[in-house]
Image (cartoon, rainbow, N blue to C red; front, top):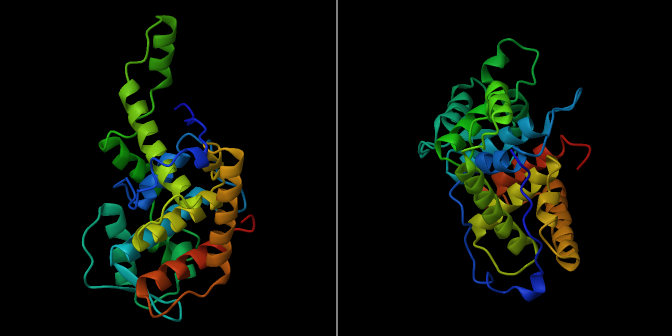
Length: 270
């Protein structure tokens, strides 16, 4: 799939979106990450946690917190909540893995176990497999991504001079990505104030994009002054979640802080 390259825009000259206060996408966090990393050429790093793989597990946990499926106590231990409403099979699998655990576990342990980072056969049952492929399948069903063409079909099209007949999915992919980028740039440059639940979502996404090394997709859409503003805000967000303890009185906020703090500490490059 071709790289998406949105046009540059000057934050100071564009106030048309200053009234936006809610995210303009109904995709969940994991789906948004796959949209951003599908064409980025990101590969696993030998001897280290695969950034995208680990991030998907962190986002699954964050989504469950935001949807009322799990909570994290003051000691960093993860517990399921009875009010969980079904999201999809992938989130449901994570929820029930946590629920069936004999002993409650801290958030760092769950990040590693869900990613298959264990030498224990007994604990391998918690590994969520084929996560990226399953999220991608969901996006294909929503007609945002399309399945890759076979090399044979691509070769036949080339030698017979046939053009591709699937521009609609590319347009859909680019449109979804551009809307998310617009929300993130609006937030990072302070063009408007978002609702608290969406601020948490965008903070989560910023941490994920930095962890996966694709935050430049955001900066490339901005002018030089806009980029400087966004970079400063990104630095503040990363520092906040790596260093701040959060407020235990606010269950959702505290749980997100706990996940992001444990997650960001796994990356020496952040």
